[in-house]
Length: 343
Image 1 (tube, rainbow, N blue to C red):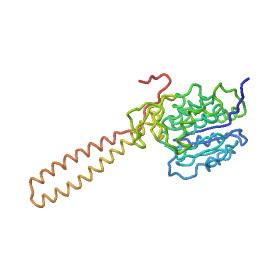
Image 2 (cartoon, rainbow, N blue to C red):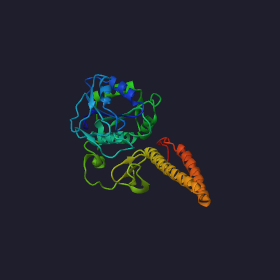
Image 3 (cartoon, one colour):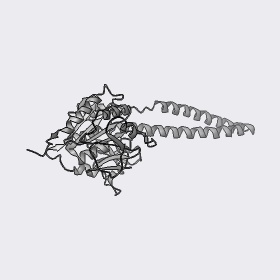
Image 4 (tube, rainbow, N blue to C red):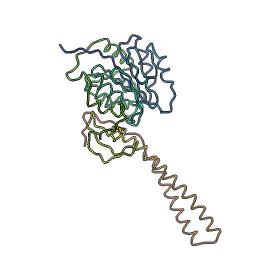
């Protein structure tokens, strides 16, 4: 008979529409839960510290903002603070201002990857309401390492992007209502499981990937091929790295992007570029208008005609840019499923 493990590390991620789902989930977990619960919610770096209090009032489990270096204890909920990644490091909680993942800090994938690396089959991963696909790769790695995945039913979710992406990325997720997921967590934490061979112990490959969060050393180049794309966060070169479900992009400093979040990040960069161009043309128009008035006041007909033509061309260009800027959307395409072929 193989080694039996207790599933006692629960990692939960949510984004848009996720606070109510988190409150419902934690409100249905008992005070004596035989597991540590770690929660990531996509929030603004400038957000206050109200979330731990909201979740603490949701149910009997003690919820608090995570502190770097504190031990993982059963019956506790560790909440990621604003602008800090929440990570598992052995039996310890770690916080990091490491590189953003999928445009977020805190993000789901670093937490889920760290749990997969260190807790392996002890991990229960839960995805709740949210947009785009943060957490999908982490869920796939949790499954690969013998852990289990539960996903809020997309039909129940306020925003179904994250749930649908997690379902597409995994082989056998438990898809149900938030209340049913809470009961599932209790059942799994009260039972023991015989993990697949090779899933216990620390996963060295994942641990190496997490070095960007745990250390300040000079990182190695990402283990992939140069993609000829640039990082939306730092403009550094991106490498395409093979990983479940559909690979991801990573730069030298550690920013990582799924294909879906990459499209969203690029849209933001393009929009910023448009606004810079619009601002510069508006400034040029103000200067041309002053020069035109000055030329007309001095009776310089030829100069005034040339300036008038330049002003008209710049006004046309400004109108075109504003129209193009309004067409730049940030809605990413639907996530790939197991049946989709990469081309």
